[in-house]
Every structure is written in structure tokens, then in C-alpha cells.
Image 1: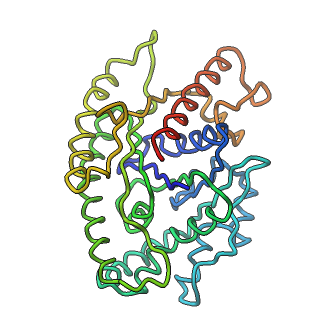
Image 2: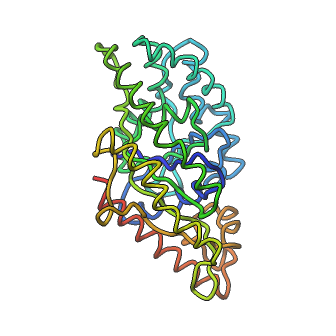
Amino acid sequence: MKQLVLFNNKGGVGKTTFIEHLGYALEKRGKRILFVDADPQCNLTSYMCSDEEIDLFWRGRGSIYHVVAPLISGVGEIDQKVVPHKINDRNIWILPGDLLLSEFEQFLSERWVDVLAGRENGFRVTSAIYRFIENWAGANNIDYVLIDVGPNLGALNRAVLLGCDYFIVPMVPDLFSIRGLGNIGTTFVKWMGEWSGAVSRFPTKPFKVQLGKPVFAGYVTAQFNIYRQRKTIAWSKWAEIIPGKIKLDIVDKLSAVDRGLVIRLNGNQYHIGDMKNYHSLAPMSQTALKPIFELTTKDGVIGTHADSVRKCEVEYSNIAKKIIEKLH
């Protein structure tokens, strides 16, 4: 089982759409998938579940918040009775998000002092989501855990990213997305160093904690526009800058710590794939609660839409294949 996080310090880069489509594409290749919505904005949950289902999760103690609620209140441990929601008859589950998860963000920030001091309570809180995922995914033979997080470098994302095996950076070829790369490598190196030192001061571990070595698995560029089979000029300009910035801001900084923290695809390339903008098919997909490549005429697919649906399936299938081959 591998935990994979889609992360960029800039929002609006298509990470939620990408992670949802990647999960379904991996499932089509015979893999068992657990989605985890660790973003308090709950975009992944709203993409995959109806409002009625989400209301039941929240009222029935079935969200990610309910996993950690006993720790926040100080009355117990993580709630292992929470059961991720199964998507129809698929080998796909989701641990739903919750707006209340923002409460845990502050709690994690406060407990980081305990982590740095090597105190058990800090590790118990910081490893909470990681331990739930490890326990449930292990017991249910999950192949890939795909975790959606918010676009920030806060305490919640720190806890999640320290527990992942791999992270992928989604990009939009524009100034703001590229700017968002600026402090990813520096911050990750700082987190890993602090975690490693803290773990060394916590020798007797009554529970499993994060390894604290997220490996950079590459980047994807999303939402570019096509005109006459070519990327538009404005987007191409920024797309040409991305490889150099990825190397400078992430690859070089992680490699300086440990060359094993970077996976090199096709030699020294880090680009996993391009995902085009499917325009009107995106909201259609969200309404139907299914990926674009599973839309049918019943969902409103007509005319040229059908060709775009097929192209989308090929694109995500190729990326899923690459993920399976490279992320051992």
C-alpha cells in the first residue's frame, strides 16, 4: 500500500480533479483505492458524494474529523470505528472531508512543540490521521491511498505529507502556479529534519509514526488550452519555465538531503503528463459524481463531447500506468 499526496502551495491548479480521475483510472487497472479528503474545504468529497450522503457522514460520525475528534476533546484515541464510504460496487472508498477538520489544524500546531521535545502526546496527535489510514488500508488490502490537501504549508499538511510515501505537484502553466513552487523544497527539507531529530528523542514508540520522508514523484501540468492541436502561446511560455523551476525548487533541494527523495522518470525528467482543459465536461462530471471518462449520453454527452471523453480516458490511463510502474 502506498500513500500518495497531490500538493502545491498554490490553489486552483486542478489537484482535486486530477486526484479523483487518477484514482478511478488506477481502479480500472485492478487496484483498490482509498481517497482521503484532508482539505477542510471538502472539494474532493463534494466531487464524489451527494449532499445527502455528506450530511449523513457528518451527522453519523463518518468523516475524517470524527477520526481525530477524541484527541481534540482529550477523551480518547483515534476512532477506528469510522468506516470510509464505499463508492457503489467499485473497489473505491473515500474517507470524507469535514469543515470541522480546521479545528484539528490548530490542535496540531500546538502539539508540534511536544513533537520537537520528543514527548509522546505530540507524536500521538501528529500521527493520528496517518495511523488511521495505515490501519484501515492495511486491513482492507488497499493498493493506493490518494490524499487531497489544501494549498498551504500549515500543520495539517505537514502531518499528512510527513506520512505519505510520494507526492506529486500539479501545475498550471502560469506565473502564480510557478511562484507557488518557491518554498516547497525548502519547507519539506525543514520538516523532515525536524521530524527526524524529534523521532530520535522518542525512542520508545507505543504506536507507529510517520517515516517522514515524502518522495517527489513528479509533476503534472493541467488545464492548458489547445488551439489547432497546439498549446496556446501564453501557456506554452510558462510551460517551458516549469522544468527548470521544478529542478531548482524541489529536486535539487531534496536531492541534497537524500537522492532517494526524488524519483527520476525517463532519465532526469520529472514530468508525468499533461491534462487538457475539458471545459463543459468538468461541471458535467461533478454533477454526475463520476470522472469525465465515465460520462455517457445519459449524463449529457453529445457530439464532440464523446471524443473528449475518450481522450480523457486515454490520458488518465497512461498516467495510471506510469504511476503503477514507477511507484513501487
